[in-house]
Amino acid sequence: MANITAKEVAELRDMTGCGLMDCKKALIEADGNRDEAVKILREKGQAKAVKKAGRIAAEGIVKTKVNGNKGVIVEINCETDFAAKSDRFLEMVEVITDTILNSDVKDVEALGAVTAAGTSMTVSEYLTEKIATIGENIKIRRFEKLEGILVPYMHDGGRLGTLVKLVTDKPDDAEVLACGKNVALQITAMNPQYVDKDAVPADVLANEKEVQMKLVEQEGKPSNVAEKIVEGRMRKFYEEVCLVDQKYFKDDSMSIGKYVDSVAKAQGASLKVESFVRYERGEGIEKKEENFADEVASMIK
Image (cartoon, rainbow, N blue to C red; front, side, top):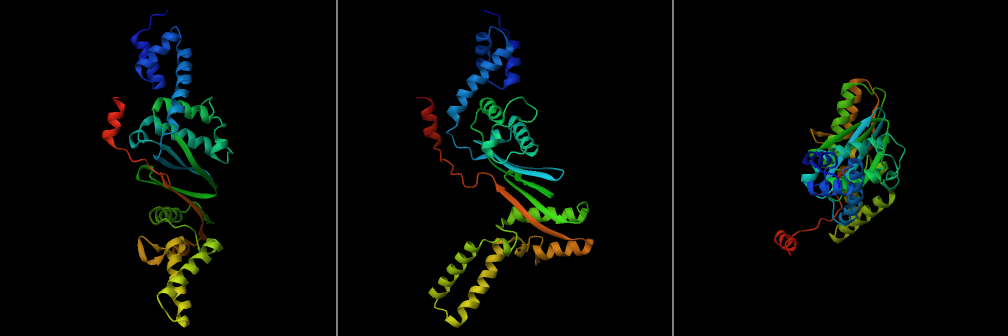
């Protein structure tokens, strides 16, 4: 059996992020061969990853990134805010974001078979290794890619992220790009669902009109004014869910649509918002409520 030194154990720990005792046991099992020890730890890490897979991952980060005319917004989740802020997790997010950005992959399932940027591993293998070294369940939840003139924005350390696509004949104009940034801020803060009225699905529109008409009827309004009341409430509906109809958060005397038009006029440019994607970290994920005392008790049984 090889004589395993403390230095070798420490070096293996730095390479893998695994615990000291795990590293020592792997080196002993590998008879001092560091590469073989790394392999052993990865294999054991896979087993650990399976155990962690059922744990709820609702923390993490929403990352936006643009390279030339290509951009991506991705949500990657872990279990705790502490892990989400760690260098290992943030490095992993960069690798996965670059992998998506530089490949033709269309969905999360297909992403698993793609080679992770800067590595010889598939994303699935890379993620399994990171689950082992970071010690938490990690999931690539969703991503979306856009092409064109793009403006990315991240808020509150990646709790929220927005990617905006502009159509303009002056893509390098500083004021046009500043307008795009302000639009991204608006979307992030006010959470519109659609760019404009034309983008609202017909069934959503019909349902909202039906709801408002029933409310007016329940309020006992005369039938000859009901339609006008509903029209007024539908305008309010558009102001809430359509980006261009929302009041501009920096100047509520104008809508976002009028703000964009004013910038276009001032710069002698054509400018409009074509589309956007907004993610909020953990939205829709039901977080498990933990009783700390019970958790500690369960650990010492």
